[in-house]
Length: 144
Image (cartoon, rainbow, N blue to C red; front, side, top):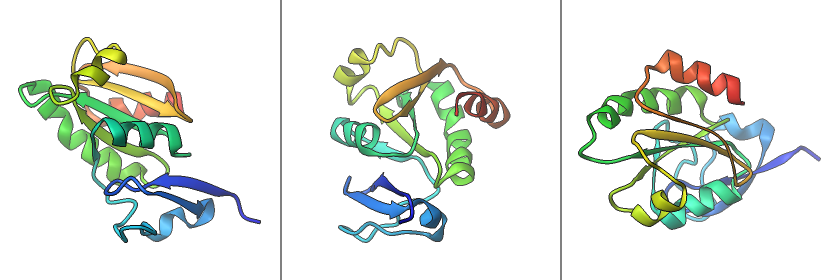
């Protein structure tokens, strides 16, 4: 039997089991029918964060940001480019620290933007500050 992976829907947080070999074929959520990989960072709330990080078999890169943060806005196109280039092998997501201060506090977010890479519910690495796409790609390659 082909190896399967769990993928969490960025729209409804439904959990989907897919053959790893078919991830690149544009799969849709079994619950809401949305595309599982949309080429843009998924916006998370606390529940969505918990589901994406704990239940997905894919590594998840989460950008902790705020609307007033200029470096965070500079990172937005870099993260969109990363999502387009690395999906379906990596989920890219964003969490607004103004709206979810409790979660940001529990994770020890002290400066923004902060990027945390998770796999199987555990933090693999984190980095703070704005960077270009090349630097982010090198950092990710060194972690995965």
